[in-house]
Image 1 (cartoon, rainbow, N blue to C red):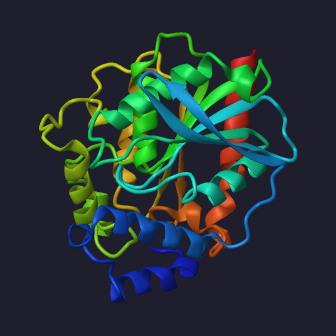
Image 2: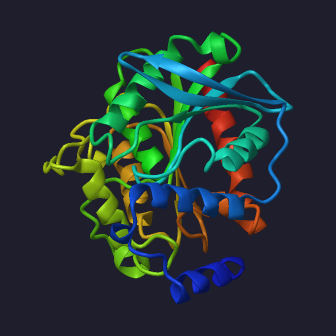
Image 3: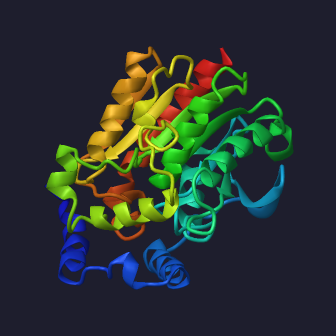
Length: 312
């Protein structure tokens, strides 16, 4: 059952559904997503500083933004990949969320603006995530205390890139203390029970996500490729410890639960946090629905525990 505080938003989404993405141009879609983000952000959390910078990777440069919290503990640097269905989203759309998470966890956040489809189709986003992790892991001291641990984090499509990048870089001694995966989409084959139950009218319509996957994958047809569908990884031994956050009323809930189970199967420490009554994207709605942010305190505690364990 949807949380009472979210019912007005869910009801509005049902009564006035968003246009199908096929009816809009990509520039229009991105502008609309930015406007939506501005409308739900509310008062932004105060942090010590926010600095725009660039990550110089091989053959391209990615925009990034470093958030330093007022109560900076200097123990961990969180590398963050935003959501948006691989097609929309940028540093601005997730600015309020990164500020809030940085303040609550007392950790520095480095948000990365990876390349989007359809201009840059698969595996561009994956390559950006992998190379960004390697780049930052080799230069932690440029962004935080040299002894700070690295946490890789993402929401929705950004969580997908985070899971894949962590799997592909395991064994490289990058000192990743944890991966934090927030309501991930784990492939285009969307046939779980939660999809059937919540796939329409719950803030994320599965038809829209399928359309985005089409833009993202282009002519790439192998959905069994684990870079496309991370649940297809044959071995995740040695992957970073994980925190997986799912929302009870999210069509992607079952995929997140399955990913937690897959990690556990390969003896990867994992903790599954389920936000009761919440919908996909609930963390970005925290300023409108304070109850949606209650899980952040729990999430912060889990993140700190993994950092402490990695320091021992």
